[in-house]
Length: 175
Image 1 (tube, rainbow, N blue to C red):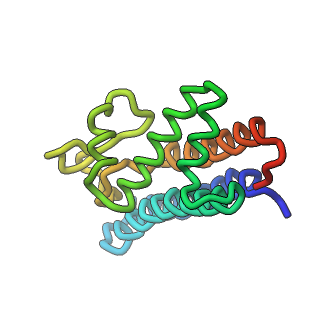
Image 2 (image 1 turned 90 degrees about the vertical axis):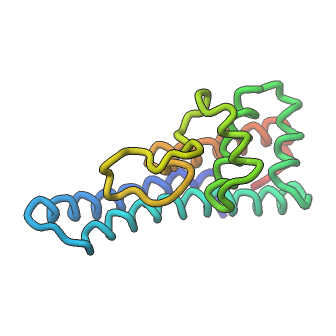
Image 3 (image 1 turned 180 degrees about the vertical axis):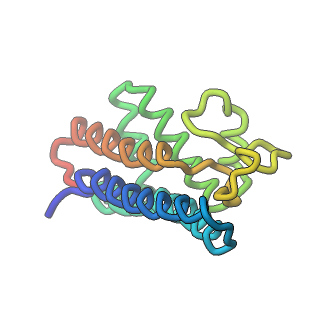
């Protein structure tokens, strides 16, 4: 069986390519007619991207828990990675864990953490009292994190990087 981290990017690219094809078809149809159904289809595509990001991170946490034989896979992974001294990777991992938590749960500790460092993030967070990310974007859905293709790909690549770092520090670890 292939490792999760070997499949996650491939799966993500497949999903994003499929969504892009549908999006292009919908946009083409919108050139000749306005339709609520077509706008809802664009919103559905955005929702699917959020579901993909949340799903891959949730599955990754489960795989970490199983592979590291622990109750909190993300915390154990962070503890292991502290040994490497790769502060950039640790910070990015924590930022994306918070972003996924915000997507799942809305405002709370993770949201407050990200708002406090919003200018340093590799993705956009909806700041307090902001109504939208981009005015006039009919495809936008109500999330506090902007989930575009880059965000979804960054999630997949981060999972690959974290997995590799853990394997480098724990060669007997298989996930």
